[in-house]
Length: 193
Image (cartoon, rainbow, N blue to C red; front, side, top):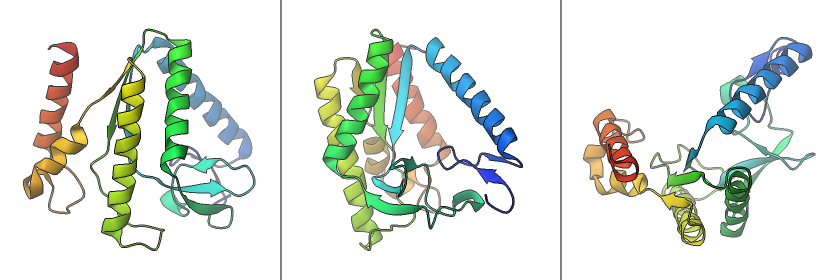
């Protein structure tokens, strides 16, 4: 409960006034996501960070840091920096589940260029961000080399190679024309349009 409302720790910004309403919202979201999965034959994943928070009781990974979106979680979760092997195992499992259910599905992966806003590691933010992004990039190189239905798309590299001109003034968000150019390149590369 947060401010008298039920909040889902695994889906960002999902609130309800009662547990019953929360269960209904959660069931509705699950149905919509399932329908999308059933209808899809292409899946796109953007991986952003290796810093996560683990629920102390269940071991599940919370979607966001404690306090995000007016949420709680500070007492229920603990910080964890997921390693190469942990990320490799989880992403491999995602690929296996999709491939098992949809053998002809194509899976596209990239690393988010958006830098960490803060770190819970105790490291300098630049060090923490570099470690997070490079870990994910290396994992995705291994995954895409191992699975013929997985492609790595270099949107991270496209933004980073653009230097300061790729970013909004805040230095964290990518300028809209850069996002649009990357999206056009992705579509043209894989779908020829």
